[in-house]
Image (cartoon, rainbow, N blue to C red):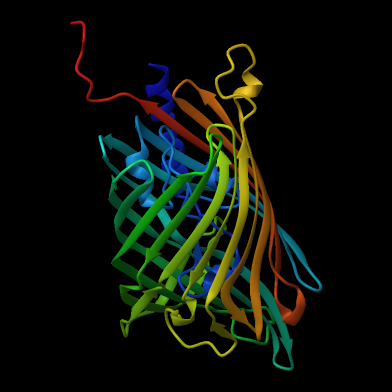
Amino acid sequence: MIKKLIVFASIIVSLNSWAQDNTASPYSYYGLGEVKFRGTQDARAMGGLSITGDSIQLGLMNPASYSKLKLTTFAVGGTNSSTNFSTDTEKEKAQRTSFDYLAVGLPLGKFGMAFGLMPYSAVGYKNENTVESTEGTRYFRSQGNGFINKVFVGGSYTFNDNLSFGFDFAYHFGDIINEFTEKALSPELTQYTTREKNTTELNGVSFNIGLLYNRQINSKLTFHSSLTYSPESKLSTTNFRNIATVVYTIDGTELSNDDEDINLPNKELTIPSRLSLGFGLGENKKWLLGSELTFTQNKNLVNRFTELTQVSYENSTRFALGGYYIPKYDSFSNYLQRIVYRAGFKYENTGLVLNNKSINDYGMNFGLGLPLGFSRIDLGFEFGKRGTTSNGLIEENYFNISVGLNLGAKWFERRKID
């Protein structure tokens, strides 16, 4: 009964978070938005490392892990982010609570499968500035919000104790809205506020394949390796533009005049190909240390509406180093010895180039895996920095607190006693 209540509460919290902005980064304006981490909170706490399968923990980064499950597993996760934004002259703060994933894994002997929902990317930003000229003072505001969501289903097969293979099929959908507002603040200028709203509706499919391989080196040590590859795929878009003069009431309601709807040319957007290679060494149910390198062909990204002169894209690289330690996984008398202690480091060249400056992202991760029988609560803490204050850009210093629930149970078992 308690597990059912936890599951129900998790779904409600997740859907409520899903309805909110998943990011506050001004860099989410470009390309497909801010691409979200696609793994569970236990992997995130190790810098994004996911090179092994687990019998009771659902992994989402490598589909080859599905057949490692021994229990039917329900996983849900969310993150609270606090970000400080800095330029050469200004500072701002923002806080967001976001939904990360909702998934179910099913063990089927040597086979395994999983399905679920997660955001692929998110857009959420708001920039305001005032410009003074000889003609007067004008106020400008640029803001945007939206998601590209991903529904996925995948399968996996374990060939032997050392090798497993898996695949994911995903359907992407969502819409992104970008709004630009201009308002005259000087009495000598026209007092109407003009507003341009651009809407993009997107959909498309993608694929992901994965391999997991491990080899026992001696009675204690095991070598682990992983490979995942996602080929380039396309998203179809439908673009609209609405232009109007508007006024706002005291409570913020928008009243528009002279509306004009414009159908913009539709274009295909690219989800870039992605290749990850990981290696590690560890002792089963004791410790693991590994690294993972990911290459993404972000150079093929394009903007949703117009070509912007100050932005370009380059192929990106992500490096993760991390691991875990369990003092004594089967300790009966000391709960602290059964906790999984995790830590990691990440560095990523995001592929976004603004004002001839590459936007990089790096951070430190720490986490705890709190066992509850066959289930686990995963807590993660992340300190990081994205961007820079040079070249007229924005630096983001963020602190994330992540919570994941991994609930395991035995399903499809024939009752031994009626």
